Image (cartoon, rainbow, N blue to C red; front, side):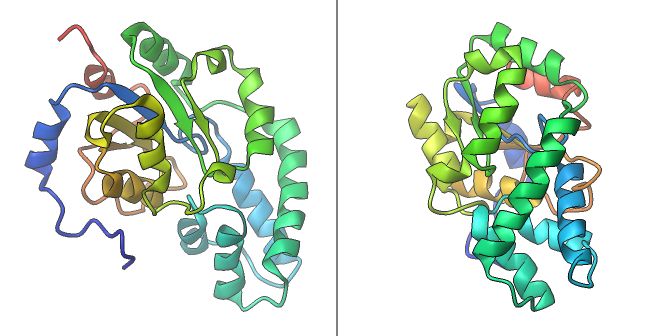
Length: 238
């Protein structure tokens, strides 16, 4: 259990009530939520570990998700007692990931519809991702909605990665709203824990890689970005 554990947080019914509070801004994770990059991270992690006699696993993936840079790599080193430095292993990881990203970038199902709905809502929305800025700068220009983002926060913009709430507290500050008025969409347990710790209205949209993680305390576990319940949360006409 980490110091930002949500155990003892509001019940499901209380979170359902919180969902009825008007949303004044939306913060979105990227990897595994908007962009199908978790399968690439899996390939990278497995390649790194195979070179050292190990295999990547869901347990390690869950530990690394949401953490930034060397903090994420440190989880791999600790779990397998590797002799590599975090900096050297991160550089090796970046080289592998960059090559895969150039060849295999694709959106998550429903991304276009969700972004269209967000733009129609008139709500400010932005990106809050643990990915490095250099990779975000490769991904975003490929999507026409990127110019509508109110802010882009990356792992380079915070000191503490998820599950620490810094990312989402900063996102609320960027939109000049209380975190309690912000809707956050996340695909991972660490990401949801960060949003909950910040006090945001938190929705989990698990991917095939994260569906077995804990989403305790969230107000909704959506089926995908096409889930009609998501669209109700940003309906500003109600």
